[in-house]
Image 1 (cartoon, rainbow, N blue to C red):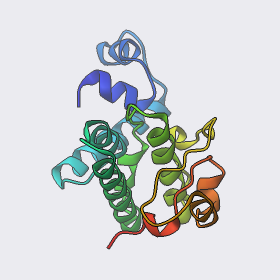
Image 2: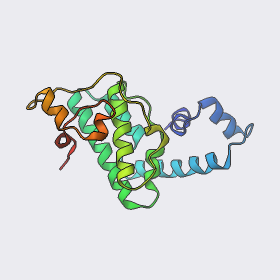
Image 3: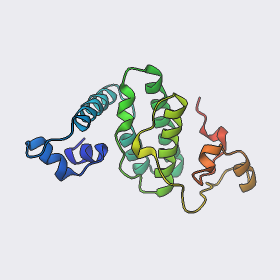
Length: 173
């Protein structure tokens, strides 16, 4: 991960992060500790080939089609679940804010799924996962269900974000 990407993952600008690294400006102790925790978790995730929010967003952005983008999204979500079950601090890798997927729909969905998984594990969701609902409803086409059935089968936490996906489509084997 580049310094600019790490700075963005921490929620600061590359130029501000550069002033921290050069010693021209001192970060708060909270920022310093958070940066260290996230850097360590990102390194461990990469070493063990565990997807993080930045890696998941990049995989979605680079996906050749929507089916592959969904697979990457769900794989990232499943990796987050694994990290949250460990209770060893490795979930800090998901505190790193991702760059855009290139689509507001997937950006919002990634944020909402991340917040949901943290909340389900009894943990505070990362700041970046607190997002506004989409302005327009997003109801991806479904091979077996019509729009009304999709809306009916959507979990409430997704519907609040104006995203409509049947719960069964979020399950993985």
